Image 1 (cartoon, helix red, strand yellow):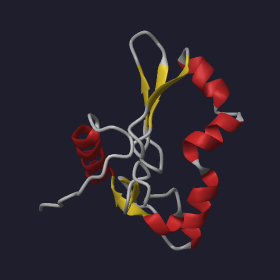
Image 2 (cartoon, rainbow, N blue to C red):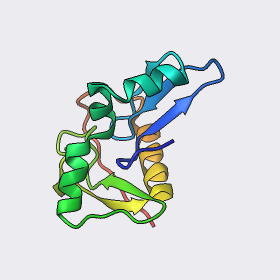
Image 3 (tube, one colour):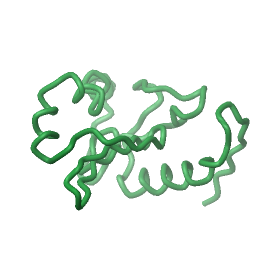
Length: 123
């Protein structure tokens, strides 16, 4: 499944549940089973995963999702100029978000923290 902010939750064959943050490219095991994941949805961990306050701020700015959309970043938070703020986010097709975030993280994955990059957007 994926969240409104474009993160992905994966259940592996072993039954473990993982969270892929498309904002940072981080992949983290968050539950030992589907049942454990459902239990954790009722805890503060879910606030970290789904950022309901940010979603409320986006909706209050009339940034409302349509079908097959999620929020994406103007500047991804992996960069110092990026942030988890309503001003830095906007609705986009989920397909476009996953394509862009996947390409971005694949392109920079070998770079050390703090490396300077220049992005070139090509249609």
